[in-house]
Image (cartoon, rainbow, N blue to C red):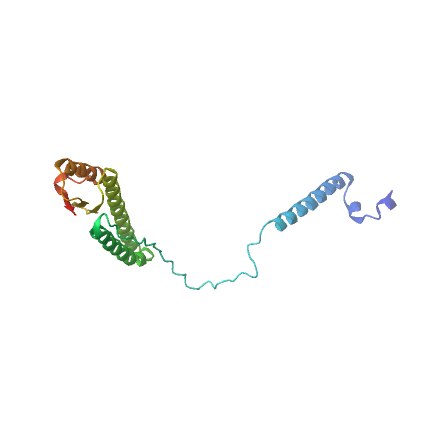
Length: 191
């Protein structure tokens, strides 16, 4: 009986019951190895030799905020006043954004927070002005521009004159959009 197992020296050391366990463990190890190799081959590698790498101490690339500028063409029916007004207003906004952009990337938290607050205020101002102008056009006004400030709102409408009904309509729209008191809303017409 001994000669039968002499070809397998490992099995001589281990008893009969342990041989079964050893076979099961060896089978599991082979299966896990095959599974691991197949997973490694199916996964994309984190490091690609052709990929350029940068040193750990390399300076961070400067991120820039990009803006798109829409060119507004003159509207013959509304006069050049409204077109020029919007162009000048957009130019001032772009300058403000250009000054705030470097502060948004600042490492000083106080400066960054203040810049974010100013950026948010500017965005809200733009949104309110556009909303007022669009609502006025929907209500039948040919053209209008609005300037929203913290304490007052100025609205200029393309019309030879305004009726009391039109003035109250403009006030209602501005009040609904901004919440500013009626005595702080300045309305004028321009032809």
